[in-house]
Each structure stands twice: as C-alpha cells, then as structure tokens.
Amino acid sequence: MNAPHATPPCLMNNYQPLPISFVRGVDCRLWDTQGREYLDALAGVAVTSVGHSHPRIVAAMTEQAGLLLHTSNLYRIDWQVQLAERLTALASMQRAFFCNSGAEANETALKLARLHAQRKGIRQPLVVVMENSFHGRTFATLSASDSPTCQAGFAPLVEGFIKVPFGDVPALQALAQTHGQRITAVLVEPVQGESGVQVAPSGYLKALRDLCDEQQWLLMLDEIQTGLGRTGRWFAGQHEGVVPDVMTLAKALGNGVPIGACLASGAAAELFGPGSHGSTFGGNPLACRVACEVLAIIEEQGLVANAERQGTWMLKALRAGLRDHPQVPAVRGHGLMIGIDLRQPARHLAEVAAREHGVLINIARGQTIRLLPPLTLNDDMRLAMVERVLALLKSVR
Ligand SMILES: *Cc1c(COP(=O)(O)O)cnc(C)c1O
Image 1 (cartoon, rainbow, N blue to C red):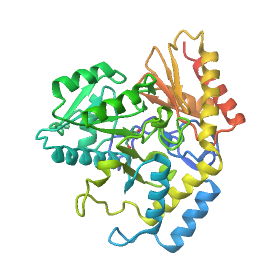
Image 2: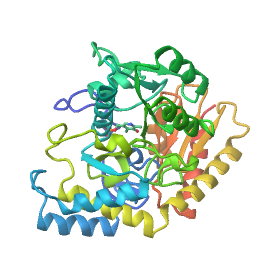
Image 3: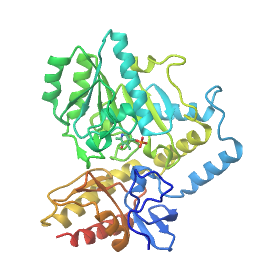
Image 4: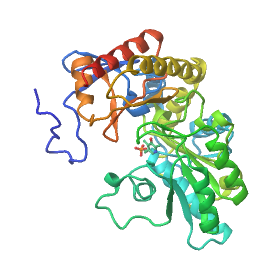
C-alpha cells in the first residue's frame, strides 16, 4: 500500500490526494484499481450530478468527438447558442457567457460588477462578499473568498471587497449607510458549500434582492455548487422567487466535462461589448453539447424533484440516527447538500469512510462531513449511503 497522502513527486504539492485510484464508475458507484466498490456520496464535489457514465452523456460525447471538438469563438457555435437559450430560459436570465470553471465564471461576474460601477461613475468600487464565502482560486476570486488558507502568501490581493456576516440583513443595511455610494454589487452563495453547508435563513435572498433594487447594486448569486437542481430547485434563488442580475454556474453543468457559465439579466446583460471579455476554450462544441444533454437528463428524469425528495429523506434519517450522538452538534441540509458538524477534527474521516465503510465523503473546513450525492440517487442507494455514514460516525466517540 502507498504511504497515505503521498503526492507523486512529479505533481505540485497543493493537493493531498488519498491513495485510492478509481478506474470506473456507474451512476452512484465507483470501482478502484483493486476492483473494490464504493458508494459515491460526493459526486466529485457536486459535479457528476447525473451519475457516472450516464449512457446519454457517453453517446453525446462520443458522437461529438467524432464530429467536432473546437472551432474558437471567432465563429458561431450552434451548441453554445442552444445551451444559452436553455439555461437563460430555466434561470429567467437573458444572456450567457461560457468559460471553463467556476472561478472563471466568478471572474466574469466581478468584471461585470466593475463595468456596472464605471457606468454609475463610482471611482473606487466595492463588491460586498460574505464571511466564510468561497468563490474560487484565481486572484480576484480568492480575494473575494473569506478563507485564510486560500489567501495565505498571495498578497497583494485584488482590492475592492468588503465583508459582512452571511445571513445578516441588518449588517448589509448598515453598510449601505456607510459605504452605499461605493458599492456596486453583492456576491453571495445561496448555501455556503465549502464552509460546511451553511444555509441562509429563509427570506435572506429576497431581502438581498430588495436592498439591491433599492440601492441599484447588482445581486450576483454564485450558484456554482447550489445550481442545476442540487438544492431541490433548478437554482437555489428560486426557493424564494429571487432572480439575480448575475448568476454563475459550473460544477454540475458538464457532469465532469469542464464548463462554467455566467448568466446576466437586465442592464447587467448589456455591459460587455466586443473585446471586453473572452476565453479560447469557453463554450466549445463538446462542452456545450454535453451540458445540453445534462440539462435534458435532469429535466426528463425529474432529478430536481428527486433531489428535493431524496435530500429531505436523507436529512431526516441522518438527524434521527445522530440525534443522541455526543460528537455531532448539528446536521444541516438543503436538498442534496448535507453537512454534519463534528465537535472534533474530522479530516481523517474521509479515508476511514472510504477504506472501512466504502463510502466517499468530503470534510469541509476540518470539522464538517459534507455529502453531495448524485441527483440520480434512488431509495436503495440513499438507504445504503445513510447506513454507511451512520456506521462511520459510530466509530467517532
Ligand atoms: C467550486 C466552487 C467555486 C470554484 O469553482 P472552480 O471550478 O473550482 O474554479 C466557486 N464558487 C463556489 C460556490 C464553488 O462551490
């Protein structure tokens, strides 16, 4: 057996991969090089939402690979137009820009915020971000994130961010009084995923929408993790009937094929002009065709409603099973985003879960077990996952 957490010397040392290597997956299950089977309660961090090797994804990818992968944005790309039409209709937005990751989608949103400020004549614009937020690893997005680990050693960061507590409307109203003239946008995750599935109080997004309208700030929802059915709505803002000015997507959009999107509506949709932004790979025929297939599968298989139903059952079963656990102060969730807090450091549990219980989980911020199963989860898979997670927690005393 390999030494645990050994990064191969030919790779940069920024990850700590477990020495488990998968060769094959089907829906919610994965197999490693030893032929051992695992239940995937993580979905590659909210990416493989329609499951591994979905036959329709395999067919769309292989057909498109045999036709055309890439032409550049110097030419019209029909699959890109089709994807933009579908996504903007689902999200009640107007225009789309495609890129290759979540961070790039948020970079796009932040550039729109700067242009919005310029239109309003704001000289030193501020974007409001939340405590414990995560928006990516590029310079602007790590500057927007509230994570000392992501930021350590990378100063000077990008300027122009101001932080308030997540879920706190009065704090934002106070900021409107003191900094209102300089604020151009509010960037927020409807559920904070990386910081351990922090669910905003109900009514929060609606209150943000109202305040942004009143102040003429752009409301920018980072739906990279929460979007595309994960929380039991197509987009998490829809739980409160909130349509943002800007919405970012990535993770599940390509089910593992890299693609990100920034959607905009109203005035925000008209800010870019020719030459103001771009991406060589962004919106290529392969990624866009696969994303169209992902949307069609989510819709035709009823996966949004399934996420809500399975998520509700899963949360209920975990809460019941962990009610009297002395080391578990809280179990939270929204659809198929579930967080289980522990009173002790839990980093080692991802490996214990995989090796001893055959279930893939993630540990967020050191002390929260995060579950993000595929949206295709059925009753049997859900019961098995819950059973394995409860067995794991039985070993924690
Ligand atoms: C994953 C994530 C990102 C970053 O996406 P990348 O594709 O890793 O760049 C940004 N915001 C949120 C909310 C995320 O969950």
